[in-house]
Image (cartoon, rainbow, N blue to C red; front, side):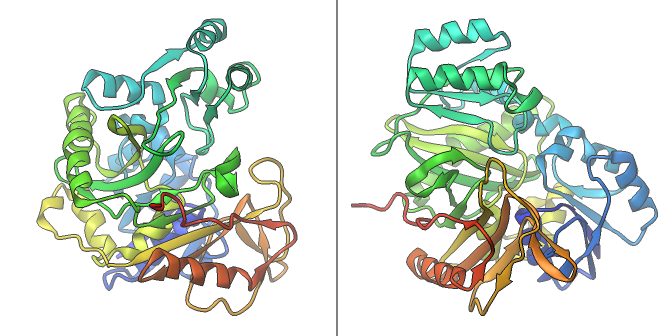
Amino acid sequence: MNILVIGNGGREHAVLLALKKSKRVNKLYCMKGNAGTAQIAQNVDVDYMDIAAVKKFLLSHPDINYVVVTPDDPLALGLVDELEKTGIRCFGPNKSAAIVEWSKAYSKELMSKYGIPTAKARVFTDYNEALVYVRQEGAPLVLKADGLALGKGVLVCKTLKEAEEGLKDIMLNKTFGSAGNTVLVEECLQGLKYNPGEEVSLLTFTDGKTVVPMVTSCDHKRAEDGDKGLNTGGMGTFTPCPFWTPELEAEVMQTIVYPTVNALNAEGRTFKGCLYFGLMRTDKGMKVIEYNSRFGDPETQVVLPMLKTDLLDVFEAVTDGRLSDIKIEWEDGACVCVVLASGGYPLSYKKGKEIKIGDVGEVTLVHAGTAIKDGKLVTNGGRVLNVVAKGKTVDEAREKAYKAIEKISWENMQYRSDIGIKYREG
């Protein structure tokens, strides 16, 4: 089969690397891709937010049998819906189901209606009304822009001053653009030992009937060590989650995962694709922080390398509604991903810095914001490279990843040095 993967970041490169292992895959395409995807796929210079342009490309390439839509924006735009109308088979939810990510207000209302455990929240479209509520509730609080904001539209405010300033930035200054026209003001969940709490990313495959959990992972959203600094799209991740147990997984599947899938079915929004659960362990049990309607980034970079089953088989089983017919297996061990970013990220940063790479040993370099310019590999985004290493333990994988980083450099490269040590007991 020939497959087109939509997107141009580290997640898409990771998906392509997993698909490349399939004996059933002939040729891979990536729209738009990056310097890394170009090594294993044919990059396609088409704006994937232009549905007409995407359809035109596919109609001119009838050899492409299947499309994988991974970014949130085209899912929210309804790209899967439009492609399916033309008979093109896809992996990814339709617009109606993808609402669980592109409207945080809707997802919160869904959880409230169907009794899915989550933080208490109020939804506001008026700044002054929101400000009154923020002052009434006090800190700590979490502010969430309703729409899509590249994974950065969440502010954890520890003081009332931070909450007031954050609300102004989102609703008046439009820091996240139109995504902040509607805002959720949410309670800050308290963890068992940590504040704001122990978080885990649970990605699942679902065809709307069957749900198969993937291995768990722990993301690092803050830009600096110790979970300090600005919120980012993710500076690294690792699997498995230290506090995840079979008993906890069974509880989450029963109280959160299947109730969510069933709720979406009841609302006429059957979800087929990768349904992502951002979860927090609190003193009142596991609660949902957020849903995503696609593979997480950089969670995908550590989850898919642990998959033993042919990814294409899984994708097609989801598309065809027969996920219960296949057995999905995972490797034992651990995987760590450290994100190397441009200096200044997540704010302003410069592109076009030459990247120098030596002998990195037993790791996989997953490209995110890279390009080839004048025959040289250069930076082309905020998050540039993902250094992915596997090992028997997280410590072993960490050691491989950070040893490899010593062989990689460009001007003002930045990264966190503490990926993989979260939530250790003792």
